[in-house]
Length: 493
Image 1: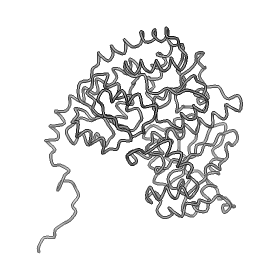
Image 2 (image 1 turned 135 degrees about the vertical axis):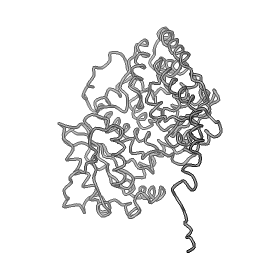
Image 3 (image 1 turned 90 degrees about the horizontal axis):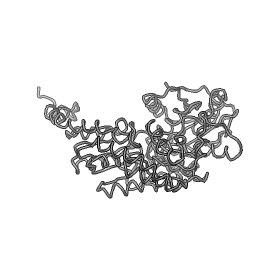
Image 4 (image 1 turned 45 degrees about the horizontal axis):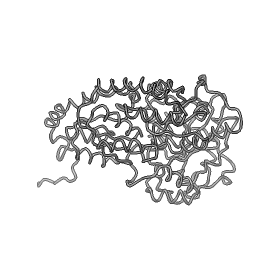
């Protein structure tokens, strides 16, 4: 359950920083609308933050894609880290929804919440309450960092988390704004917090010695992996790097603060999920080269190994030996688990394009891939490869884009978000949820090659059952059986 932190009244609340933009949203809150909230945020001093988000996470030709509240991404990153406390500042309804879905996804700790009303928001008392809560939580025996996340209303009202202490009793304080009107998706909100933590850790490392990672450091140069992925994938990538004289480094977002130092201390960064723009900026500030795409399938693995070898000055002999050892196994796994059928694929995790590459190399007739994340330089190779195979690629795809693609290509299987799957099944087309059934499986190397074939082929084979169910339930939930009657005619007496 959500935890309300005890925050005693501050006698000098009138001296606290005032939320200059609060008047613009007072009484309207989240329902004020995107434009009103953005304008209020700019007037209250958050213009620089919004400008940076607009550059890091461009909206593209479409409006904001439909997904869960973006702040869930930042909340998830903090909740998965050891010795990290998280505090939310936002409307109670938003906090309830975020904490509910966080625990639904397996969070095992409380989420701090600082309540507010119009008075505390406008007078600056909310900021004082947040500061009190941070001091309460900053126990170095229990936590390494406290993360405070401003949701929509506090961001629009100018609650200045930047004025919080940088550290308290040795505990790091990280304050970020993650408004729904500034950060398009929860996948990019993961990057907001990961980037903020990397920036803090990089500055610490530049100032002197830092805490060593919990696990022993590899003797070989390491490749840091960027983006949440199935636990087997880093192991697979480690096996690919070993013949090159390299080792796999931490995965960002990390599971503990001290891992951030290990992530920064690398030979190169593999942007497995290419939308982590803020994190990539911090790695580039640390002088680390970035490698796009991922080692999926035969072509993807060969190209990725080429990039790693070039960036890390690996000899041609080692590279050729690694390819000779790895590629036949991947080719054999793909041949042994072919996917037969026409597919459309979409999602909002950021791994859609590399998953699409794997399906194509597995033999699937893939016609469309849509991702809610933006186009970046580190996804270009995947886009070019997919388009060369005749696959339509859509960045910042909306649900309407995904459904339109399904109607156009008439797939045997639609892989997508929950509403897309629902739309598919209503058309008697089998559907699978991308997040639970594709991104929650290995994708890299030989382990990824055959990981989804059985599930996808079984789903494709169920089309006749969907047709039977559609015929059986025809008309149910529609028209007069929909449970909603817009008008009732009175019978004549």
